[in-house]
Image (tube, rainbow, N blue to C red; front, side):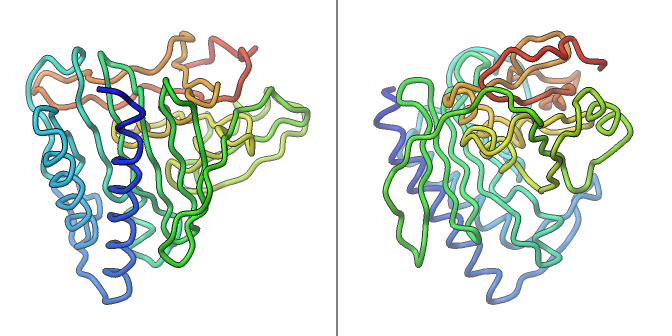
Amino acid sequence: MLLSDLKPNLIKIALAAGFLIQEIAKQGFATTHKADSSTLTDADLAANELIIGRLQSIYPDILVVSEEGNQYRGEGLENGDWFIIDPLDGTRGFAKGSKEYTVNIALIRNGIAIAGVIFAPDSGELYYGDNETGAVFYEVASGEIGLEMPIAAQKLRNPALLLVSRHHLDGKTKDFTLKFENPKITQMNSSIKLCKIAAGEGDIYPRFGPTSQWDIAAGQAILEAAGGRVLQANGKSLKYGRVDENGLLRLNPNFVACGNFIPAFLPFVD
């Protein structure tokens, strides 16, 4: 598969899913909870159906793994191609009226996130990246996508620009921020933090808590295409396809996403 051919398809699918979510938000939606007590809405399910249907129509031979109802059970994901999607990242906030949600789609090849798209419908931000064509940004307004703008992760600034989760500013994260002299800290939700670093609008995103593989894959693909990194405590790149004893995707280990530099804080405490 040529990633240059994949690019327009992933972008169109992400846009369609994002516009659908916006329509459902306007009309009103039902909210329930999954077995793990996480929030689920009609918008999650509708976007999930749209994304999976379109991916399977275009790429019938490639497995699609989703947060919503299409989780893979079994071995073998560490080899070959497969899609991983989070049709609505930030559901908890979305259900409460937050605009900080995204559509995430990534292509994994041999455990590596090689292509990804993230669309934030309400802010009109769309990011795409792959390891062949690089990383780009589009502004989306009134249902139309604007001009393509290349983006690139930057060297570490002083003071450092740290991006942290709005809901997960825990003790480990606070301790990590002390490694920097008077850092500028911004809190925001969802995987858009990885995109901001890819676009040179942030330096570091530390995450010391559970995330699912579908939460991070698209953002990692975009960030690495822009020259950045997503690193585990041992300094190795975050990989995909790991499953537990039940054959379900494991949670990600703690990680730090950063711009185009070798972090001096490695190895960090896991």
